[in-house]
Image (cartoon, rainbow, N blue to C red; front, top):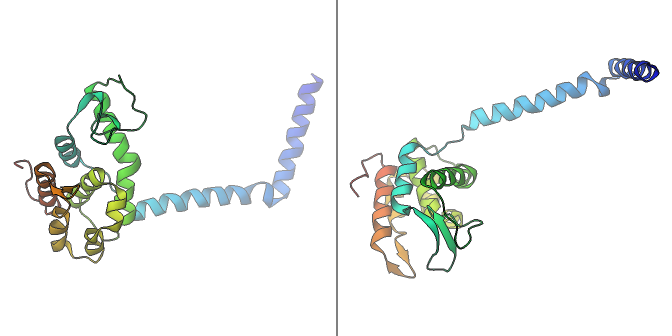
Length: 196
């Protein structure tokens, strides 16, 4: 009983202290909620974009899906739609897990690169094509590309041609990359790409 009384009296003293000193109560509550509201408002203003189903399908079509771990040409263990993180020999996935891991990787990483590096306004098709391009070629290539420069300058008509330039591996033009760049360029322009 004494412990209960002591605890209640400590709570009463603490409550009185919070009422008297603004640093201990309402001021910090206001600061916390103010920060929360600012973060919410900034996200609303910025309107971060996410990959649509069409963008997801384009990436899946050109990446291909392997449900058993394999070593790619560079000797890296790979599974699913080009997933390489924490993959070991003998790993096996279901198609559902491969889809989920692709979605998660796009959401956690590649969408962020496009959202942060592209300063020009984009529609959904343009965003989807850029996420596919970045997923295939990597964020460093996006950062240093003339494609990003012309896009951020608002020269949308020049972007498809810039995209198509990235169709080589080790200096050789590859048919698969040429097809993928063509599909991404068509998607960027809002045109039908499924026939590629």
